[in-house]
Length: 80
Image 1: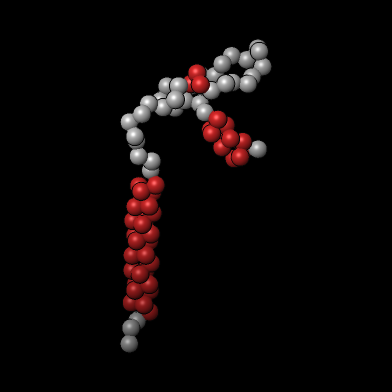
Image 2 (image 1 turned 30 degrees about the vertical axis):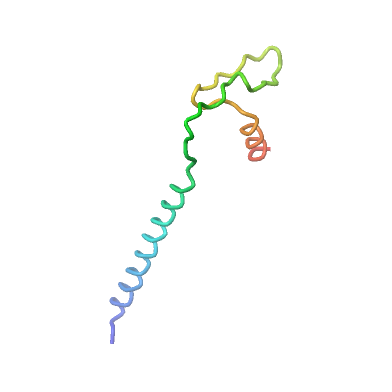
């Protein structure tokens, strides 16, 4: 007959391995979901048409993360 301590230890051991498996599967899935670079440069920030008031300056956009219509649509879907 197993003691209460051994039964709790077995449950914790099982939960530990389930958690480890979950982390491994999650990391594997996230790595496969990363987009692959095709070597083409991203579109430039000048291709995006800013609709802003005349008094507002054009926002600074990093060269490696240009603005796009897709980003605007995503922002509206998430925050409106």
